Image (cartoon, rainbow, N blue to C red; front, top):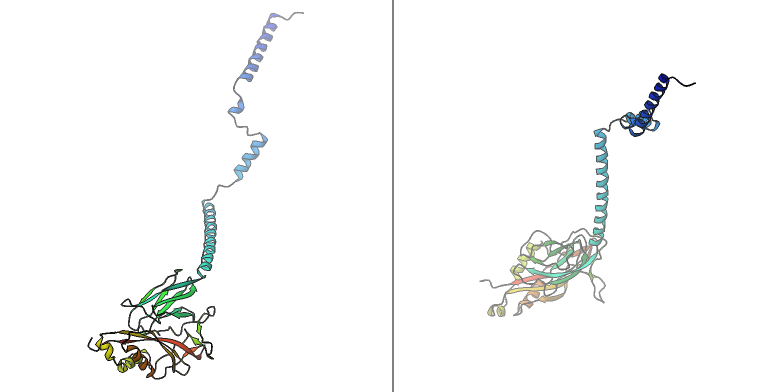
Length: 303
């Protein structure tokens, strides 16, 4: 039995609609391109987790930044401390320092005292005012001479340290007595083979003329007689004496470090021998023999 024309026409219409829908579905736009697939399991879970998260607080961000900055500062500080510690070790090494000590008029000062600050360790200058001493690179030198203002000079790693001392008094002992002694540094001792008692170059408490430096100056001015030979030759200057002051204040081993001749050297020795006994120097509270240097000035009274 053949279908009627009406039924056949309707079947053909439905077939064409189905074909068109298949073509549109195949080549047309996808619904997922314009609609968010809320109901896909993976996407839905992710969105729920995101919605549950609270918005980042600005105060929390500031705290994170502060912690990061503090951590960085600590790292820099520790590194700087390590560098400083290494530098201190290097600066504490012992070096040999040398130099020359001059008077205010540029003349060498024989017998000037150079002492390491904080230690009973030091030396004296030779006839040309030169010295040599081993000290820490970061130490300080105390430079003094009788009748001159003392100086404190920082070594600062230098191997050459010079100084110029001006005549006058600053109220400090010429040998820097009373300085705190550091036991790390060895006391310099000058001892002859036959001597029973050591001779110290630097001590904690220096020998002192009765009445102090002012009385010593008065004694020298009052007792020095200008030699006639020096007067005739128009010679003036300073005679530098070196001698040892014993534990009883007496003198021995008197030497001329630097003289001017024409009878002035002998006159300087005569004046020294005419002095009363000095107060002896002490080391660790006990009297000791000390090497001392003293200049005596000669100039005409009418100069």
